[in-house]
Image 1 (cartoon, protein in one colour):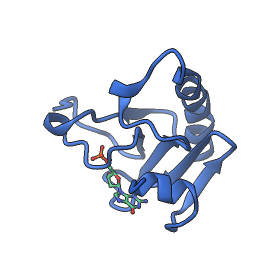
Image 2 (image 1 turned 45 degrees about the horizontal axis):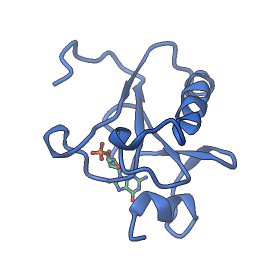
Image 3 (image 1 turned 90 degrees about the vertical axis):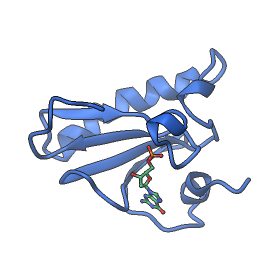
Image 4 (image 1 turned 30 degrees about the horizontal axis):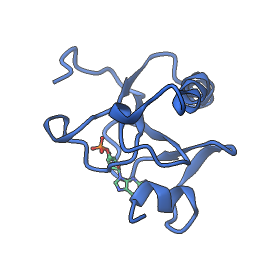
Length: 111
Ligand code: DGP
């Protein structure tokens, strides 16, 4: 499958990894929008949050159990989590990912 984040997860495209296990990978965004900007992805392809089902949702729970540990390791006590779904939300990579954004005060506007 011609999927950028599948290739990053497989190690075919380099990334700066901050966490990895059998199921998930977290790596630094190539164009950070905050001092800390990390992407969390399942290694198995899911196109977006719209593709989460009872059969694959355990990996999403695992991501959300891991995010606070990574945030803490990055020195964050306050942060924002974002997942864009589809064109109106500007999803540019069609592999489920959660943005962890932090390290500075953010706007109270989300859109
Ligand atoms: P989104 O717009 O929600 O689909 O976010 C995709 C993010 O992926 C965007 O913030 C930039 C990041 N990104 C795109 N290509 C690469 C890449 O090759 N490496 C890394 N580390 N991040 C990438």
